Length: 236
Length: 236
DNA sequence: ACAAAAGTGTTATTAGTACACCCATGT
DNA sequence: ACATGGGTGTACTAATAACACTTTTGT
Image (tube, rainbow over all chains, first blue to last red; front, side, top):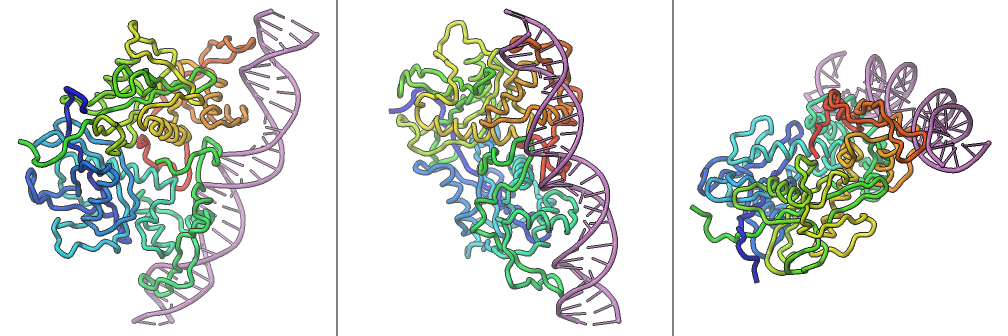
């Protein structure tokens, strides 16, 4: 049985994949292999298949491009203007993914001609992908201010200077390192490791990792209008 | 021209319409007039038409049901499990709307048998509408903690006790009225009116309204990790 | 006169901000 | 020995939280 007299529409997911290289935020783009806009830069996307949900499609597509799974991913608002794809109407469900840039390995046969671009120097993108990226960035800035999600962009072990550089980069601002250290440690989300990272200084900076044991209880160390413990965690 | 060998899918928008009656949060539901699940309670929804965007579809549907336009509305995550509608695959784009319950007038011919239900006593809903409502509520709780959006649920003129009841209701908590008053007034978002509302006490409570002049500058009177002026406004 | 809801201030505690020097190490 | 980035403490200010009495007025 079917609903009668209704228009069926192509639905695609597009993956907005952010990484951080220690200095800049990067976006992973592919060079389109098919018309329209062949060879133009684009987000990695694909059509939703009959037996999969949008989340599953996004995971499939991300895996295809990066080889990664179990990655931080979140759907944002659909893009649905009828004329957004010149070939045929397509509704796009954009997913924002945060990945550790070092875990990404171009597939042996680089089918998609993928490349990381600094978000400050993005090429012209097809369709409305530019707007998707801007929306995604805006949401990332918002969310990262209240939730410990930027860790997704870093290796399992990272240093406080690295973490601080990430916050400074995202908000294009300078943060006092004494205040930053005090605040980040007061969340009790981090565990100090014994080893140091000597790659960026002679003295070396201690590694930290997420303290899995305390992670859930301390997830919500933030806030304002409503008493902290009233604000639901994990929604957006 | 068309993309070949791809599956096209029905796409619907569903409207999650919240109101507040002074005591309880209400959800506007309709009694479905067609199969499947005829006569069961459901969110108001409809399929996206060929020449409209999802936003336009949501406005159209909300107008059809409530007669209202220019209403606070926001799209949340798509629901896309292949089997969510037993008749045929349908991807749902849920929209959350906040309306002043007093502005809502059942259409003269009540085509949809709409009714307000307290969110504490919702009937069983069709498909995954229950999950949509829960997601919407969770996002509303989150967002209202940082953004002055609950005003959408109130008439243009409202009293501080009414406003406080709204916050208390949403978070199911008690707030000290001295602290609440001080805080809400310190945002400079409100303008005190000369008249009082005498409907709920002998003494009467002063009306307030949104101070349109100062609204934009003072929108972001909130926050934590990142300096206030770094956090983008208007994203979620 | 009294019941019922509105309105208002002070104090203590906690969180945020601004700021500068010493430390460890590789060269 | 020195240059480079890492690490730490203190004092001031602002925000939050806890708390109770007086005001107005319809009945």
